[in-house]
Image (cartoon, rainbow, N blue to C red):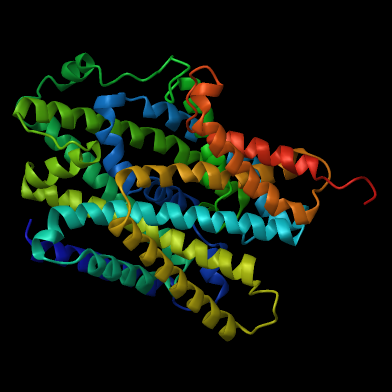
Length: 481
């Protein structure tokens, strides 16, 4: 692909996002950065959430793993869909009833300021690590397949992209993100559907339905209880991953809370859950088609499954399809970054600094918020460069697993608040929330030896949450204390 063409696409895309940011932020006050003035349309939020949920990791990894694991990933997706209905029925009404801008305000109301800041801190850690990994994965693909040939250093690529993201999020906030995510989802789905149609219509795949059915790549259910892809484990994990990583995540919830009414927000969540099932099926179908196409065309595939889609799109497919892939990949990049950056800024300002409780005028609040925003962008850049210079693929996989350890305490805190009576002693809450994931890490490390060959996988989240709840029960205040 022509480097000039690529750069033109990237900068043209950025100018479009910048235009949306300018248009959506006209006449908006400082509060609009955090809540979008609660004027977002539910169906726009629902469509845009697809792009937020399907990061660059999904864009490359889900098709790539089909040959090895079939369509068993869909078991997890079914759990996701169930989880979204639970979030819509339980958590959204709670947040609207309390009129929260930051969802961790619930912990302050239920337990106190220490629990409140502990929950917000675990969110900041979780989202900072998760978002920067997703950004790195996409930037790395673009760097390896396009920019290295131009002699552009990775640091320059990362700095330029972060500068672009800051450029259109610094002013608009949630109100801008809702609309830019919608645009980015449209481009991402266009790349997905366009690639499927090309491969299906290509030579040698007229019998693609029969070929896929006979390939063994459409295996949906894993019935071996010892595997980390066992269907019961996957569905349950999907449910609780959604509850934790969507229902207890400020980035995902601030978009839902920007809808005017709880009924509209619930409608958004439920509609999105159904659409997500279909979109993930398309990604799995794409994976099977890519492997069939490569086999019949005699194309040698890379060792890393994550590189299969990029290799075919950029080195073996027509230039227009490679161009569509790059646009889709960029569209997967920006939702991973812009919403996370905005949410981290909002949570830091509201939960940790207490920007609204200090009696500052709007001008001072804006100055502080913009400085925090720039500081968070700098942290993003530092993490991305770390992954590039020091991390190995194994380390990156491990960092993805960290989500279970960091969201687990959040799930435990909220579950204890909703389903248990009493309050824990505040001074012990941070200790419990740190001890639970550390103990779970040890259990996971030796799970095969301790549990008769059982391999602990995504259910790490549930174990951490359960230990957190148990710890909070142990340090609960005595009656009358």
